[in-house]
Length: 330
Image 1 (tube, rainbow, N blue to C red):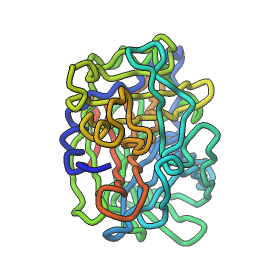
Image 2: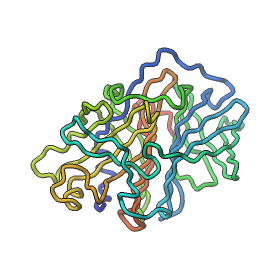
Image 3: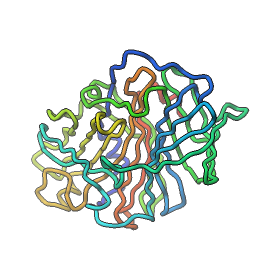
Image 4: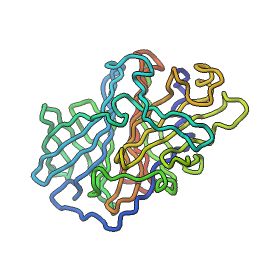
């Protein structure tokens, strides 16, 4: 997968379709003896040294006795190698019922049935109101909390001994397994937020990522979205982008797979989908759900890792939310 230098621009232009509002009648009450009064968080982070950077996508569940449980998926540039077919796994979703019926891939271990690693720790609020976490293996991290808006608490990384460069999270008292359907998502407003990405052998970039629903079609299978940028006569000008997920089986997990037409045609001439041998860019995402059960955005990672050289080991972390929520991130 070459031409990855364009990724930041392409991501900003690619109008992604996140998963919008869930209809849940009651608002989950805040608990004063939890971080921000909320138990369930979705969290993303990127960190590590050059050419060995990692991304981490997780759920944090806090208990009132100051213990916590993490379920985490993680990928590191220098620890995984192999073919695209192995590193970029099938989700089982295809964009059937849209213009092109194409498979959707995701980073290894995030596919349906992939099991996250479970970790435990303790938490406390320091004198500044920051959330300090101590993990059972000795690592630690501190997050700045923002409770300025109703329905959720946001957190931004403050410090850590794990070389975290950037990290964000959102918490509520909605069930950790609750999620929005594609149909509920399709009505969501535009999302926007920070992106930090690293291509193996290059400097880390601090960018922004935009999501715009009107640039996608909803597939009749009710579980997928397909970008509209795949209709021009010259397939090299296409931007192939697919999103899938079903809360009945995936909970808050969603899958995003994208690739420029130029790369697709170079790797697999004539294809109308993301190339089979390259697999495109693969991203794993968790939905941000507020206390009322409504979809508010995504935290996610790109883990397009095949081999350890430039253009074949890309990691990134992003938080894309309703624009009014951005003031809560730091």
